Every structure is written in structure tokens, then in C-alpha cells.
Image (tube, rainbow, N blue to C red; front, side, top):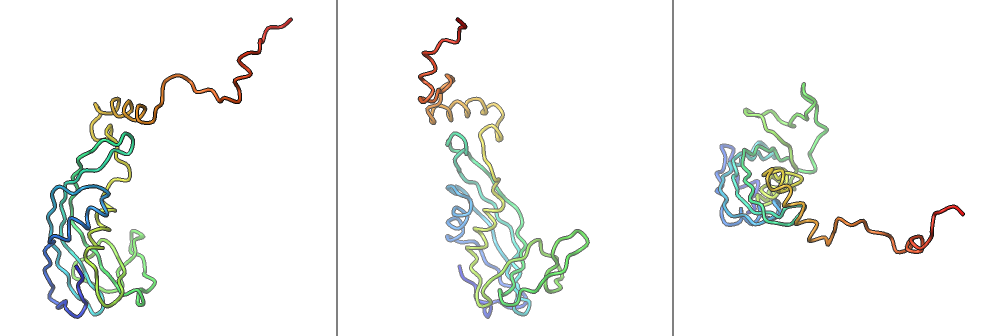
Length: 182
């Protein structure tokens, strides 16, 4: 969903996350989205757009080790200030070393972003949120300790690994040599 800067009033524009939301979340999430809900309020501050809202999703992603499907739930608030690419100034840092937004807002934002200055693609906002919120690594054992050993076994089976040591064929000649001293 594309929102044009000119269409956003200063008091804000409520944007429900319609049918485009789950598809955008799935692209950032890296899996299949089973349940999805959320809404945004987009406010305009001169040429800057503030996007605030909440997103909640339940999705299925493969385990990074064994490939089995894992159900993962993500949710939380979104608070981003988007500035036109051409006008992003060098930002000062606040007391904690985080960049300050280029404008003063009534409510602080958690993140800063860029857009083309004409319109903002809210699907890209959802994709970015899902990418950032998704854990970097998903393993069966990290979600359920009892699944760690079966996950390792499934991985070894899929990778055709056995517990027998693999000998490089170039060293096979050494097996016929005797190490006894004569």
C-alpha cells in the first residue's frame, strides 16, 4: 500500500493492515504467515512521515538446522520517522548515543528511516519490521529444549552424516602401511 505525502493530513491518517499486510510480513518473516493483525497511524511533519502502530503475527518458518516447521509468534509496537532521502541530515546523538530525529516530535520515535519524499510504501515498512523482529537463528532446541536431540538427529539424517569418521580417500594408501619397527 502506497501512501502519498500529499494525502497525509497533519492530524494523521489511520491505515488498517489489509490483505497486503500478511504478504509483506511473509516476505520479511521468511515463512508462511498464519495469523496477522495490526494498524498504523501515519502523521505528517512537513516532509517527514511518522508511522506508529502495532503488528502481531503468527507464522511458520523452517528450523535453521533440521528444516522442520516451527511456529513463531511476533508482535509489538512500531514507531519510525521517515525522512526524504535528499534531506536526511547528519543527526546528533542523544545521551545514550542513539541518533536524534531530524525534527522535534511530541512523542519520540524508536527508529529512523528514509523514503523518496513523494510516497511511502507501507508494505516495505511491514517487511522491514518482520525482518528486524524475527530472531536471527531459529532452532527447534531453542524454542523447546526437549526437541534439541531430535533436531540434531534429523539434521544428521538429512545431511547423510553418520557417527563413523570420514576418511579422505587420498589417505587410503596409509591404511596398508605398518607402523611397526623392524
